Image (cartoon, rainbow, N blue to C red):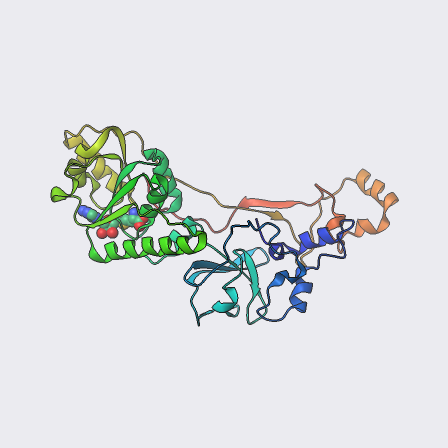
Length: 366
Ligand SMILES: C[S@@+](CC[C@H](N)C(=O)[O-])C[C@H]1O[C@@H](n2cnc3c(N)ncnc32)[C@H](O)[C@@H]1O
């Protein structure tokens, strides 16, 4: 749910025009004028319509996300750790961390330049996108397809390689839960360290935000999965996720430890790498069948009321009959240009609806 202050001016306008609500809900611009720098926007009592009794306020040490939106555009988004004596800086002004501490997630605070900044806890998806990277991550859209493909369930034991930056490890950690476990193998020491740091960062932030321990169910191992030595001796896995170069070379070591009927999902950025994988399978005697090769494509859409340059709504073109009927009822309404949003009945505003100009490029295929 969005905090009330992040609602658009049109929504506030509609609310003002609702019988019985008009005088109690100030518009965002009104609030902006009234409040001092760093004051919470919710002093009018409209903040946090729904705060669960057990929900904790944001505290020092937590990882948080700051967002500033202007009109329909996300102008600024930054993940940061809340620390004593620090400031969140941006081109849109700064906020001292001590002001954020003690607020509920989803609070809108004023920056030093008077602009409203939403401060909230990141989802796991957002954390993985913003966390520091050693290697490129398995993108959340692809990671969720892999989890589905592998049919990962609570209590599963999963093998993963390489750990990279630890994004997939975190998604697997959540999927297998406290009764399951993940063995994550990484050949590069710097990537191994980064994955462990990211995992620990999420865990400690989780403890602060929820009061509960995030399961310590990932074992990060520094080593080469192509020559694992005794690492896998006596181990068996419900499924395997490979996001590494030359995955076909790791299969002879891995497949004997995969449960019968288990899935090994392979994530690669280039289709030529998948050709090598298929060729590796063709030349091997491993009991594996390639079930499926696909790419996950998301298409972001822009869907919003069509506006004129001055910010007022465009209107659907009316038929001559409608125009005539309307002019009998209300001469002013026909002008339409400066009417408040409440005067545009349901269905009267045209929308722009088209693929968003900014799309995510190719990430990889499975
Ligand atoms: C694209 S990254 C993995 C990203 C990871 N899935 C994530 O979500 O953060 C590939 C990683 O595989 C590691 N790697 C490559 N060959 C390996 C091998 N033989 N054994 C273990 N790790 C390997 C690389 O060092 C690199 O860190």
